[in-house]
Length: 187
Image (cartoon, rainbow, N blue to C red; front, top):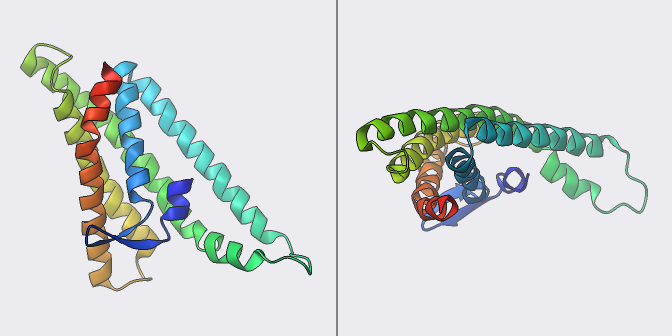
């Protein structure tokens, strides 16, 4: 929910123009990897489904808020319309890409796990490989689809490509940095 709200704010991080919600959103992928690693694929998918359900409910609730007529002493209706009025497009992009990318992440994580288990002859080895391959791949898919749905037509093509690139770079950094977190969670 916070990542969805933050997604409409553009900021510069490390010299890159990105949407603010990216780093927070990227942390979702380590959560499903932790659940996959410590429990199973079904637990990770359950977390994805819960997140998806909560996001849908949140979107519906924010749109319902906008339908109420403000009274004469209201001072927040304008800002709410500014933030949540743009939300349906962001939310649709978020819901769709969340469902697609998170499912891909979970499936890919377990496929790479099967491969690393065969290579290393030990299911505990290759954690960094399955984490990074699944997350970096699903983050690229997520970034591309989300940016196209959320921002196509609102920014120039050059800015759109730049957003995809810079957003992915930020998410890739988070993905690589989350590997130690996954090892700690595994331990």
